[in-house]
Length: 263
Image (cartoon, rainbow, N blue to C red; front, side, top):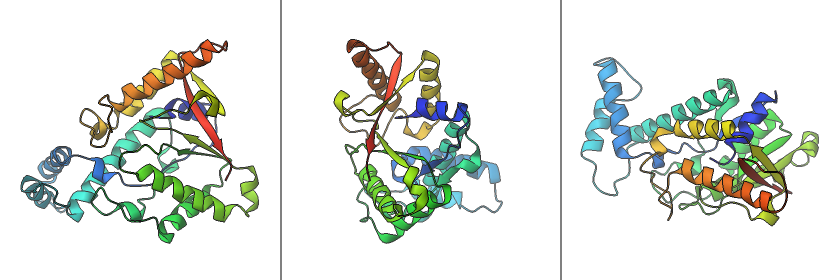
């Protein structure tokens, strides 16, 4: 949503690009979407063995009461839905599967909108993946307008991990860039890096977003904006390009914006 065009450029330019999903995202999958996948899984395996008991999942979802917390199996299925959608999108952009990482941070796994506080285990997991990759650039979601606060907790985990890693020599050449998500964009005076997109790159970004099928049409946590995420992203990126054009700079189809954060 926020840096699909930049993501594609980095891969095409030959950089060693990794994408890291901090949470499972299971709470943002509707019951109807999970039921569809459970029924497909059940039809496919029949009476065979599976890691998920699809019959049990189907029974739970068909009898679930309002505000009831999902069972562990339902949450696992919803998380797997998000994971496979993520693989579809990153493959489309051109990323190798081994460069896609899923952290499933523990703070998120409450089954409810209200999450646990950020803990040492969460920070350690984020710290470990950064130490493993030793990146020169880290791009992270800086959108604190997220309706249920997950982005803020994830960002705080990154801040804490980077602070602990800062004494390491490989961190001397590591910059942190923040992008904003589906709710807001940086004001023009806050932008430290602007990445222009061509019409074909805007279309590629849209198609990658649409691979996240469970997040289309009826988004569970979209805030006060009723538009789909891909529409918001395109409008925001095009508006940024117009602002730069009005300032007398080159005219582009769209621009993705980033703010550098000194950790």
